[in-house]
Length: 282
Image 1 (cartoon, one colour):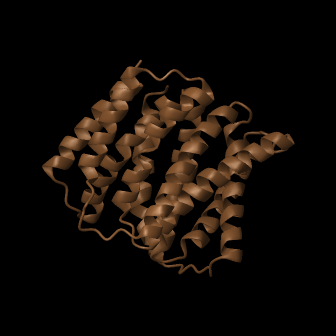
Image 2 (cartoon, rainbow, N blue to C red):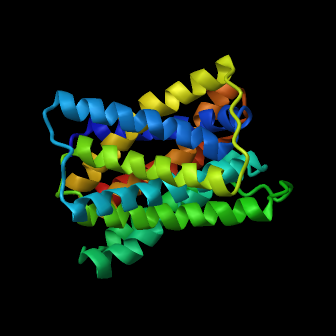
């Protein structure tokens, strides 16, 4: 593993939670995601042409990649964006989807035949404890039931997508795979806005800045790094770094948005870091 990639991924992925709120404040979440993944698909298509990777692929590979995009860009991001748009606190949404490594560890053994060691379980539990300390579960927050349901669906989707991507990640170049995954995400959200919701986007400066961040830094940057890490490493080791995301998101909220960061948060960040180190070290 190239050591700097996990650090870059955590920083970029965590920043996505900071820019999701201004996006859903200025648009319908599904319209925003359809808009985002249309341009992401165009970007990966152009990159595939530049790198001379053919986008003409076998039918099975096409179905696999599009399905992966539906899981990740559709159900996962759709669930997160929708939950935040109806009042779910971004921090609690981040904490719930951060449970992903636990489920991935449980499922990657029987599905991918990966050996899950006691060390990895211990590190994962420490990471979870640290994440809970950082964000906490504010009992005074009114959590919408639909928002909670959508976030749980997002958790199931990102876990399934990670395991699915590990099974197919050696079939295609990353740019081609990402192109078809973006198409899957765009089609999913387009169907949602055609049949279920009324789309709208208020093209404010804030929306453009936040959307540009998510297209270029998150979709082109962080997601590509994630696919690379899944391809080069075991699924359970890769997703262990997700435990750092709630902590880093909390720091970013403190730095950029002036949110409160307590000593307990600092202790939680330290515990989560130790947990990730234990779970992923050789």
